[in-house]
Structure formats: structure tokens, C-alpha cells
Length: 107
Image (cartoon, rainbow, N blue to C red; front, top):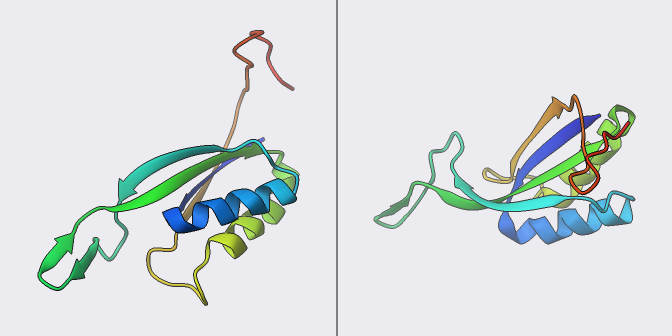
């Protein structure tokens, strides 16, 4: 199993969630976050916004589904032909999963 962590623009998170649901991946955790990328925020006029609002989406999937889910997220999160601030995707292994209500380890 792997966990995909996608940091996306807030206005694109519903599109990504809909795409994942349509693709058969309904289980997603969504967390509002703030941060900045390489461009270190954004300057509008005389005001510099150091941290910008984003949404962090977490989804755990089988390793074999990685490319399909990754492409679904990219297609739904990208603005136009792609712009600075569209987000990042991080992929990491998941060693174990337990259901809290039962304490049972999932296979």
C-alpha cells in the first residue's frame, strides 16, 4: 500500500475529490493547510502573501493503482496548461493499517 499526499489549490480540491470518487477511490482525507512553494508566496501590488491557502488530500491505495490515481489527481488539479502554485504530490509507503473501532489490522 502507498499513501498519496496531494497539496492542491482550494478551488480544485472538489474537482480532484470528484475525479477520485468517479475512479472508485471514495476514501480521502481533506485538510486545509497553508504554505508556499519555490516562488515563496505571491506579491500583489505592495502586499506580499508569504503563505497561501491549499488543501491537503490523503489517499491510501494499492501500489498497483499508483499511476492511475496519480494521473487522475494531476488531470483534475491542474489549472489550464499548468501554473505555478498548482500544487505538489508526495508518495510514501504505508507499512500497516488498523481500523480504530475494531483494532483489526487490515491486510
